[in-house]
Image 1 (tube, rainbow, N blue to C red):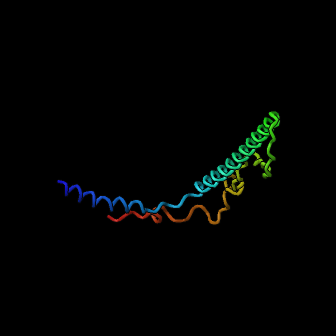
Image 2 (cartoon, rainbow, N blue to C red; image 1 turned 90 degrees about the vertical axis):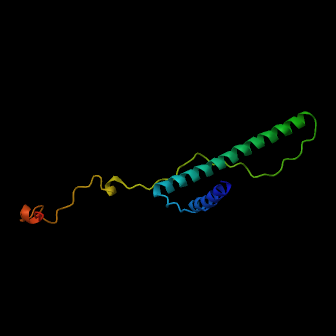
Length: 131
């Protein structure tokens, strides 16, 4: 019984491993656009978080220097750091959309190049199947 279980596990392992190498289909354009928008929003969130952290650090340093001076202790000189840069409000990248006229939604029907009917009879266009 123990050998059967070992043999079963030994056969199941390669089958499970081959499914890990299966290729995924290419993402659709809509999925790519959504992923790009998510990446842009994440980058903006990172910049915003860095800005808020920079402002908080400046406030803590200013309060520390003020409390040290109030206590009569010499306050260390402030280090030269780059100024905090506000990333501004999030602006999504404009999506490329066709105007209604280019999409064909309101376009008139094309001009007919041939008459809609022919001189053939129904029996000629749809012959009866042979039995």
